Image (spheres, helix red, strand yellow):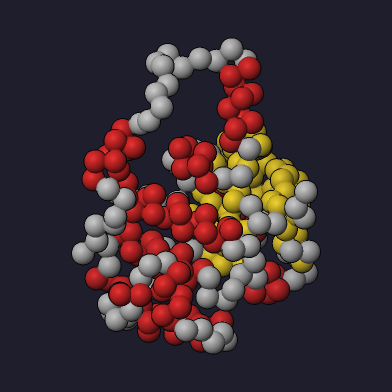
Length: 253
């Protein structure tokens, strides 16, 4: 059994009389891809922002790699990587310049080309951020979470708006990051994505965790209740058809 790297105990977050997070508890194991799933407004983003030290909790306990959030938020910041939204980048800087900028903020020495190699963007080293395609921007965004060599990275809906090739390419990138030993926390509204990527998922609704297990076990539990799909499940889906016909190669400007 892998050791626990994130432990959340009875976490609550209130905004006045509104309870956004209602006493949730869960652990994340070192080296896994852990999905936090739920509809909009369920409380998943609030939960992650608290763990990321970006939002104050109302009560409860959070430990990250043994550090207590209340006592050591700066130590936690040193060991996590958080995916920025598009607005977090200077659009007129090149990718190399952006990496050097962020490395300076982290007081890290890093070879931009090596980092860009890891996300298949070395040929874009001199391109400006605003010139990248959607898939390239997402891959670069993930690359920036790795600059400080974190133990844990947080990815917020990383494949939203991407075409099928770019989406599957990003899946492989996320798996490779996990396989290199980094714990990945991901949110997504694509259940097929969570099923492919996540070792375990927590489903949160109305501020409470309503299920937590591996995708396979959650599916088995549903089937055991007698649930059946109204349509026969085929061995492939339309996205598989699309990829098979058009190829896996990324089509980027």
